[in-house]
Image 1: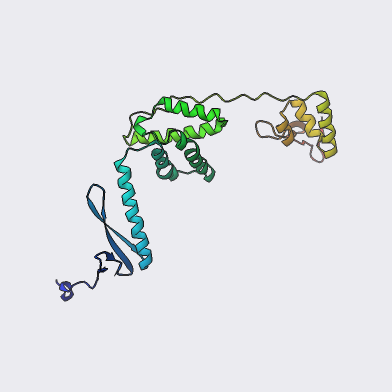
Image 2: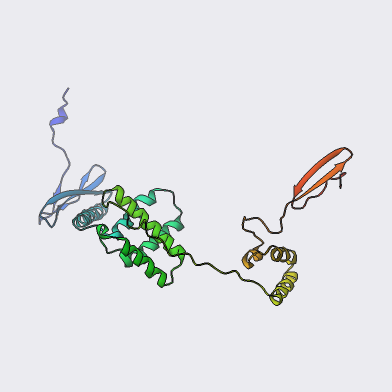
Length: 266
């Protein structure tokens, strides 16, 4: 069944400025603006932006034109290591659960370490020598082992994603080993230092904690916090006692084990 209003022309109007360029027009509850982009190779493409107001419509359309031109420029040139790392962080890794501190660390690794060292190298031209040289320069400049681990995590993630996208055939950074982590020597207290520590601990009411820490041979940082390697307190050692009341026997295990009322310990 055909309605009478089907043959009526649309009331939508398209406005053009005197110089021939299109202007925002009202389409329903939104404004729209159509622009024609001319790429360097001569090809043309129309894009249409929209917005709740004329100004917002013009801003959105200009951003859309800039995005299309940037995509064209990126497609024309070869992808670099910096492009791959940025794409991995913003479009791949950010879709997975990640703490804000981790994301900030990855972004800092890209901007401060990867970009100056190997960011300009084309992705297909990257090899093991480039990665080894980058690790060596970072080590010589005094960067810690954990900074190198963060850089390696970003680089391996970006190159693995490039392999899945068929941009490269193998990961040149996968077989490159990081410099060995420097071993820290333990710090030992002599007799005079131990006496000073115990006097200060007694003054602060922490003598028992420090006596246990020194007896167990804990490092000075663990002694100060009263923590051992498994996260338990150095002074909260579990004791087991047996309590009796007639023929009833109870086994109690705790840091401050005591017999209940009416029970005696044997």
